[in-house]
Image (tube, rainbow over all chains, first blue to last red; front, top):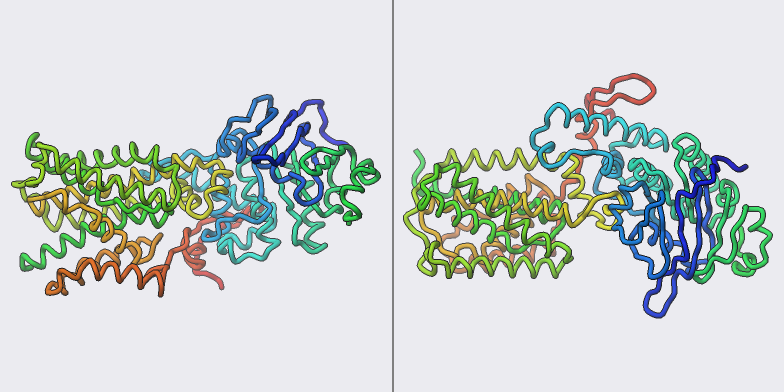
Length: 261
Length: 300
């Protein structure tokens, strides 16, 4: 099922490499993601997938190559600037703000879309109050979207594991991104939670028109919802294609040595 | 009528509340370890005093001048140093405190090693109490806003905060600036009460006192900072006889609190209020149902 391809690449990763001393964590990787596409990124542990994410979000700078988002070069941009441009992410090991409520976590995610600064905080003029109220309403809607609206007041650290993963997604969506990077969103989920997650990701693309790049080890998820899959091994891209093509690819099978679920 | 002695204690408590609250913003809420807070107090004290003495400005103007001077300094220093983390930042703030002290020790206009005397006694209990109240109200508003959320996010997880679009260095600098502003204001109140100030009054030990108040009461907790300020102003006065042991006392408090109850007497307050408070304080429309949940009591 190929949806939403209008020929334009939203994210262009061109010949990107990243060295750490003598180690090439990412080596000459090309990646082109089209608007509203869902692309999967797979590969054995240590292949460089999260490093690639970190390069795209600005946590590391590429030592080689260029990254373009929306035709704008992002190599030199800091992470907060890249979020402003429209890329949001979740983390491999959940990084919620534990000492804040569920709703507050989402409100922080909304930071780039709100304006209130020092003056607004102190004066609380009608416009400022309006923005805060609207923010809370939008936050609740997002929580509703991921099925957490009943827990809006809970401390984030009190949620169950699966709920925390969903909260991270809601928080990332609060930034109103055009590209969403999901780092192993299904990790640790049971089959029921996993199929809910797959439906959620599809809804995010269909209803919110967000482009998605996801790292996953759970092949059911990757093959089930991705239109295209790229495979990394030892920092290099060894294959790219539709899920079916990847599943039958010799190099991929060899790289995993039978780890495919 | 209050005796002059009790009046002094009350005024000192009010000033220390301002110091503790302002430091709490930096240390407790934004998670930046600052052990040079007295430098901001010093700037406020001296700038306001010089303004009153040499420029003849009205009291409130002097106070504000002192506060803004401290804030500007806080921002200027913040920009380069706030890229440092943890211990390195702490040492940098310690250095800053010493630099300010030594600068004032050598300037003619501030009296140098002799100190600055003859400052008009403008600070009354009313001034001090109202200032403390204003500080509390303003900081409360700041902390329950988009700005406050950014501060706590930085404390909780700076990397994740950056991923949310929060420019950590910028917001840390803002926190420093705001904290410095109120500390400077407190310094102005201080100099216009005691009428005589000397750079060594605002040394490293003073910074540690402020830190102690925040740690004792509970970092990231406004009520805690207030309680810490009250406790650590009133108790040493009661123990006047053992004045030399004061620093020993402060050191012991820091060690004991860290060992026994690091979250402070009150404990770190979680942003957004407790579970109960959140439900109570929210007036929310539940999406899709059109119902309005005017946070009554918690239904748990």
